[in-house]
Length: 229
Image (cartoon, rainbow, N blue to C red; front, top):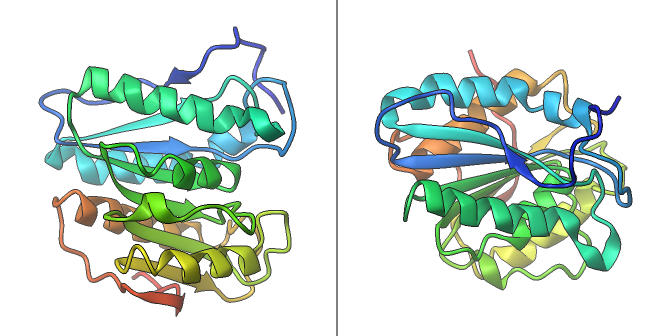
C-alpha cells in the first residue's frame, strides 16, 4: 500500500509542461489522522485522474499542476505535519514561479491542509474533495478566496459531510464566493462520481485563475453535483 520509504522530506511532482506559467494547481492527497510512515500511495493515485484533466485542459493556459508527496501519511495532532508540508510547498512554488496565483485542491486529510493554508498570499482559491474539516477549525483565512467543497451525503468517515456543511455555513460569512456541492448517496471515496467531480474541480480551477469562464454556483451550501455530458 505504501511507497518504498523515502527520506523524510516533502517533494513536489514535476510539472509536465513548458513555457511560461500563469497559474498553479497544487494537489494535496489524503492520509491518516496519525501515522509517521511515508506518504500513502493509494491516496496519491486517487488524484491521478484529476491531475490528468487539469494538465490536459490547463496546458493551453499555462497551468502548472503539482502533487505534494508528504513526509508522513498522517496529520499527527499538534505536529500538523500535512499543513507544515503544504506551507513548504507553497513557498517552494513561489520560488519557482514568483507571485503566480495558486489554487489548492485537497482530498480528505489534504482538504484540511488546503483550508488551513488558504491565507498564503499566493492562494486565490481552495477546493476540498470530501475534506476533513473538524468542528472549530478557523475560517477567517478564506477571506478574499474562492471556495469549493464537494462531499457525499453518505460520508460517515472522520471527514464527514455534516462537518463540512457546518464549516461551509461559517465560511460563507467571510467568503461569499463559496459553493458546496453534495453528491446524494456518495461515500467518502466518490469513485463512481469521479468523472463529474474532476470536471467540476477543473472548471473551478480554471475559472478562479481566469483561464475559462464556467457557470459555477456561488453562495450555495447544498447544491447537487451537476452531471456532465
